[in-house]
Amino acid sequence: MRRLVWLSVAAAVAIAYPLLLSSPFQQRLGALVLLYAIAASAWNIVGGYAGQVSVGHVVFFGCGAYAAMGAYAKFGLSPLFGIPGGIVLAAGLAAIIGVPTLRLSGHYFSMATIAVAETMRLIVTNTEWLGAAVGLSGPAVPRNIFDLSFLSSLPYYYLFLAILVITLLITWWMTNSRMGFYLRAIKDSERAARSLGAPASRTKLYAFMLSAALTSVAGALYAMMFGFVDPESGLGILISVKILIMAALGGAGLLFGPLVGAAILVPLEEISNSWLGGKGAGLTFVVYGAIIVLIARFQPGGLLSLLTRRGKSKTDKGAGHAP
Amino acid sequence: MSFVLVQVIAGGLLLGAVYALFSSGLTLVWGMMNIVNFAHGDFVMLGMYVAYVVYTLMGGGPILGAPLATLVLATVGIVVYFGLIRDIMKGPMLAQILGTFGLALLLRYSVFWWFGANFLSMPPDIVGGTFAFAGLRIEASRLLAGVVALLVTLGLHLLLTRTSLGSKMLAVAEDATAAQLMGIRPDTMQAIAWAIAAGATGLAGALIANFFYIVPTVGETLGIVAFVTVSLGGFGSVPGALVAGLLIGVIESLSGYLIGAVYKDIIVYVLFLFFLWFRPQGLMGKM
Image (cartoon, rainbow over all chains, first blue to last red; front, side, top):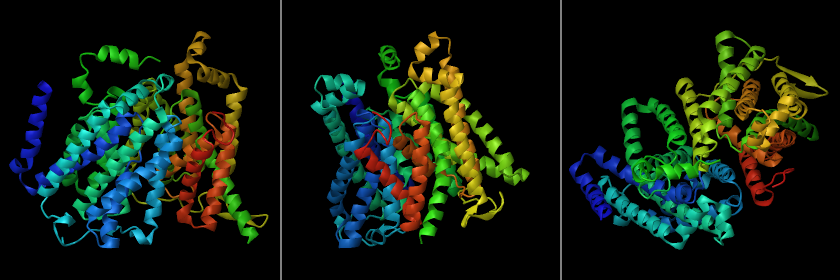
């Protein structure tokens, strides 16, 4: 019951935000928070719930962004029509990375995701057809509503809000399905889960593919809002970092963790960028690095776990930290 | 034609020896503590910048830069061990990966912030220019790097297999509790392992700084190279890292020469993924 009250308050705030704080900067900020919350929630499925830390998630983001812009730049279609292509591409790539690496220890998976992301960035940077280092652009002037090209951030805000709600619903549905039970068992002890008959590799793979598909949607939305994609904005390692740190800061493996992380970090970055200008870029990531180290060292469960697990944290910690 | 190939292979072997040197640091901590340092490549980057600062501030070449970089990085290793690794080692996998990955960002962007994103480089004649050897043209800086790296890597192997310190470290790797009962302090041994591992990256960084481009993000590429080397050679195996490092150096040079410089990184990454598919235990390792 209390949960329902909180949810309705959060929903009311989310719907009213761009109407109450209606300057272009504030609306854009809100849209960006939601966009990163979508990407971080998608990461959460494999990184939080399945416990497989992908550090190259930008590659799926790039699949979506390039598919959306490619649909326009190469075929003259609305970027919207690129989304299914991006989803298929991302899920297929996830299978190619996941099949060999999810059998191995988690480090391999993390490193393989970095290697794939970097490979893709290098390949795309050297591929004329994909615009090489310049990238691809979307429609400069919208031809009709389906081009989803707006000057104001307001339509994007509500579009992103809807997609975020869908993403969270999928996540919630997954955690309560058989797959969610398997994932929790695997995360606690893969060996025990396997011996009880949980198909560990397959479940992790499905989680990874689902996460990749949703991340590609976030990438497509990002490209539509900004109207272009290039190797840095679509496949740069720093996007992976942002996605990962938002989920981890809020709470990996918690439904609303990524949203909380995005709501803290996106404004922080936007404000520090507008204060410090280009020079702030390096400093922002110094701070990000420091935050990640501090979370890992002191609060691996993220900020939200402070609230939700206060009651049983003693027993949890005892079990989790036993050597 | 074939003569050029020999030249390319020789260059690859010399660079590969440096890869082997810093990868043996990664394999040491990975094999001993089952923790992967995602900041390993950035340690090498720090070593390069230490050598660069030594050159620009004091005008010293590698004779001064290499020992200093080794010392600075060994200290960094010890600080990182006691400040971060000791605590996240026992935590969940997420904390381990996040911890060292965050450290990588912290180091990379602190350097970026301080020095900027420009490509820096040392003067080409810092070690003594280029000379001809049996018809091959070899840069003295590359020869120095290759030979020193090879010797130090072999020395590291002897340290681990032939000395009492090495035996103690292996004992801790095998079973920390049992080692503790035998009067060996796991904490001290693991701190020493981090000092050695990070010191090796410092030395490697100072050695390649003489001919490599110096840029804050170079650690990312080198980190992946180290990871590929260790996966190929098998964890915890310094000889494995040596063979794999030399092999990767040669493959990289050859593909750079035959296909194009842009694609040499791609070849190494693809090779890594190929190995993950077909031989995840590495060339010599067992699962």
